[in-house]
Length: 46
Image (cartoon, rainbow, N blue to C red; front, side, top):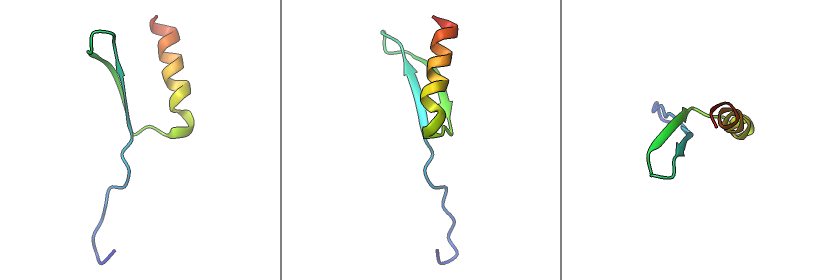
């Protein structure tokens, strides 16, 4: 708009463990696939 560019929405998901430590970060996530990516990660790493 008026020659200005914008980044838009930058969605990020953080997986935080029980001690409050960030365990995993997903950047530029898509809402329709994010939940399945998280579940897949948890199944592989738990």
